[in-house]
Image (cartoon, rainbow, N blue to C red; front, side, top):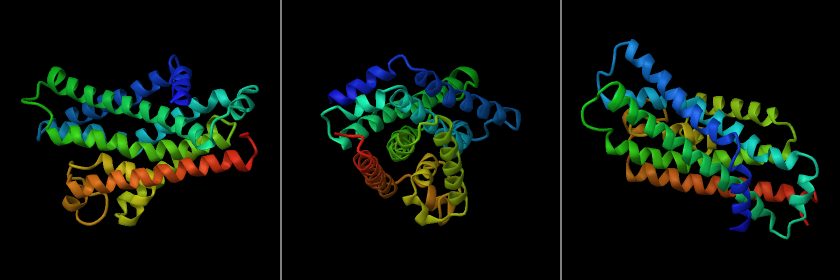
Length: 254
């Protein structure tokens, strides 16, 4: 817990929070305005959510997490901070886990901002009747869960590179690959973190992405939710262990 608190202190006044707020809010506003000018919201809240989560879930979320991971690791790659981190009497897997948890907190904040932006647009700007369907709140929670393995994967990349830009570029490419696999309806691709995240954002929306028929692939069910959680936990653990192994193999951890 102490290592995680140390990570929270590091990002407390970081630009990461500004980025985490801008990415979902700007994307949602731009997507909603595009929907409004191209025919409005024929299906009310459903249209607003689908248009808001579309580009965000398929591209902007993954890229945003890539940038955040580089920001979170930036301090360790400055000066002698890496050696200071390595000298801590803490297990390597705990150091790796603390970074991932800090990123997961930022991912949670991002999804909360997206959800609040959609609610604001729907009620205040477009005056939609009733409220956002309950299933989208559940989807938001699952998106946070599915964000963790991507956080872990990007954390592993950022730990290995002193470059701020390189892990972001790799994250962009990996996110695009995930979107392509999802569009190709490769069901087995869900074991790929970036594809799993994109797929999760489309749950409950009736999107044709994800494999199988559109309705079946994107349905929010106990089975689809369980699959998301199980795969997310397994992939996150693998990425954290890989990062910890890197620490140990490079003799950066005492």
